Amino acid sequence: MPYIAFRMLVGDRAKYTGLLLGIAFTAFLVTFAASYFAGFMTRGFALIAENGATDVWVMDPAVTSVEQTVNLSDSALQRVRSVPGVRYATPLALGSADARLPNGRFQSFQVLGVDDATLIGAPRLKDGALPLVLHAPYAILVDAGGTTGKLVTPVRPVDQWPADGAHLDAPLRELRAGDEFLINDNRVRVAGVSETLPRFPPRPLVYTTYSNALRILPPELKRMTFILVRATDGTSPADLALRIERRTGLRARTSADFEADTVRWYLVNSEDVGDMSAMLILAMTVGFGVTGIMLYMFTYESLKQYAVLKAMGATPHGLLAMVLLQSGICAAIGAGIGLGSCALLGEIVSQAGYPFRMMWFTPVAGVLGVLIVSLTAAGISLRPVLRLEPSVVFSA
Image 1 (cartoon, helix red, strand yellow):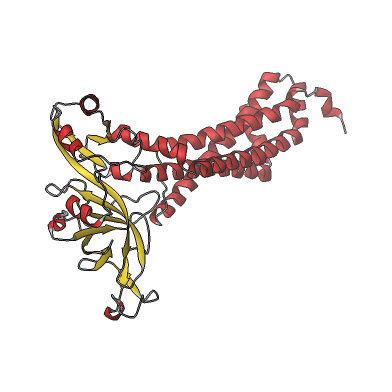
Image 2 (cartoon, rainbow, N blue to C red; image 1 turned 90 degrees about the horizontal axis):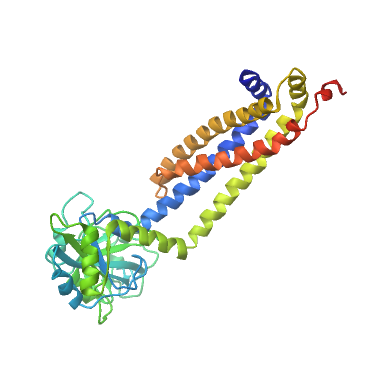
């Protein structure tokens, strides 16, 4: 019976190809949507991921993500440092500022101020060098942060700081070490270009020392956003986080927990989650439509063959197994084609800078989508087979 079911399936090449394409398209869309979702979620907590040496993040009790923050008082740093089990604790300031580039153009940056002494939180330069250049006066590191064409300055000296107004149409080049621009009317000098993880939403980044950040950012009573804590040897980060919360009243989260908090925040607040849901619904709808109709047409046009088998003694369970086997073969081959196509296209779009990340659960989501579609399509097709009478074989 399995061999007969397989021969019936591949005997009609057109419908067989249509079934495979419908299932492959379902697997591709579901996997691509899940991988895109995973991509921008991981970019959402890129700040946490790139600070791998930090065990515990300390913040205001109202903060639940790296995207929406409230600053801490300066005294919070000393309170955290006094907690047993803290190896070191360093400040990290986050802020937004509009920079005026030499040709008069404005560009918004996220400014990150790291500890002056240790530079914990600062990225390495593109060539892999340590960010020691930040110790120079007014020094900054710039980073694209997932954007393109934002870190630019005029090519010609005549277009830099012109006295006759902004030269917005001047030819531009990428920023490099030695270039200067203004942040809140404070002149800063680019000491290097870093290459950190892309952000979501994409934004250009400026890294500088904490004291320099206080100078160039708009004045606020509270400027420190996070405290980065490293635990002593033998101290569990989870236990240390609980100890910091009890002793200081601040919110303390391990890096893994803070990443999960940020993902949950995006799930609740990001409009892109709705876009992903719409893509998944579209994929499932297309899968139900194409696969269901093609399998039903294939089964309906094969009723006479099923009637012959039933007249020869095939049981309803045997016919049921044949339909399920045909659906399973199509699901397995179609899912393989869809997942392979998604992996190939994902490699292309990720190199182009799109937030695509094919994690372990994204192919699982694609396979589950295929199983749901295939089982539903098989269930729809089973009705005429189970109600079939052997006498249909003698009909015209």
